[in-house]
Length: 350
Image 1: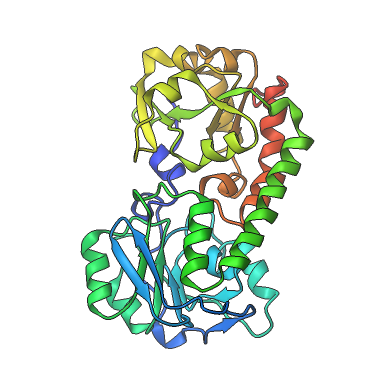
Image 2 (image 1 turned 135 degrees about the vertical axis):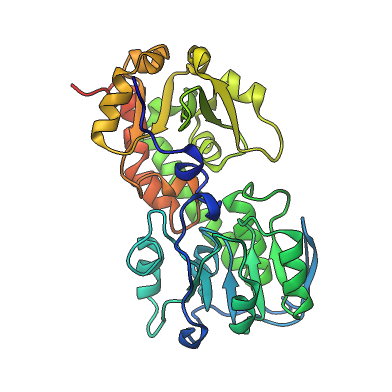
C-alpha cells in the first residue's frame, strides 16, 4: 500500500528551517518593534562571558535589542520578560503573524508590546537583515547557525550566543540557562525552570501509566523503503523521558551524540516495537492508511492499538520545539493521547 506520510524531516525536525517549509522573504526592518522588558536585570550580571559551540561571547552590558534565531528561540527571551525585536518566521504550525499562538498569548500580556520583525532562515541565517535590526544580542541556542554566519555577525560587532554542543540538540533547560545568563536574568530563568519542571511533574502524576513504559517515536520516510527514528538526543524523546518513560532498546543502541535521527529499513519494522509507538500523520485518512499498512502492522504496538499518530500540527510542538511557553501546551494536548495509547486506546480507527 502506498503511504502518503509527509517527510519526517518536514514533520520532525521543525527546528531545521530549510526542511520545515518556512516562508521565504522577510518583514521590513522598518517595522521593527521597539524593545520592551517587564523584568529587571540582576545586579552585577555584566559583563558576562558565555562559551558555546561556535566560540566564546562576552556581553558587556544589558542587551535591549534582542534577535532570536531558531524555531522556538524567541520564546526564551519573551518568557524571561524581554520582547525580542527580531525572530524567525514560524511557517510550520505557525499562525497569521508568522508566530505561534503561545508566543502571541504571552506577548499580549505585556502592555504595548509589538510583534518582532520576522525573517526567514530557509536559506540560512539572513545576516544582513539581522544587522539592519541593530541588535545588541543574537541568541541562537536552538538554531542551525553555521560558523560562517556566526563570524559575519560577530564581525559586525554583534554578540551572538549559539548552541552549546551541536545544532538542534539543545535541551530547553540549556537554552533557558544560556539566554537567562545572556540577558542578565539568571534568577528569573531559574524560577521559570522550576515552574516548567513542575508542569512536567504534575503531568506525570496525572498519567502514572507512563512511568517506565518504553516508546519509539518513528514513522515511514517519504521513500517507503525505510523508517525514520528519533534518537535520545531529540527533544521529543527527551521530554517523554522527563515524564518517566524510557527509550526503546533499539533507540538506546542506535543513538549517537549530535544525531537526532536514524533510519531503519522497512522490512525490519518489528524492531520498532515498544510499549507504545508514536508517529505523525497528515490527516485522519492517512491515519487509517497507516493502520492498514502491512508494514505498520508488523509493529506489535500498532497491532495492539498501542500507538498514536498526531494529525494536528500544533499538538506536539511543545515536545518537538520545547520552551517554557510551548511545553505546557504539549503537556495539555499531546500527553493525554500518549497515555491513552499506552492503555491500548490508540489511533487505530474503530
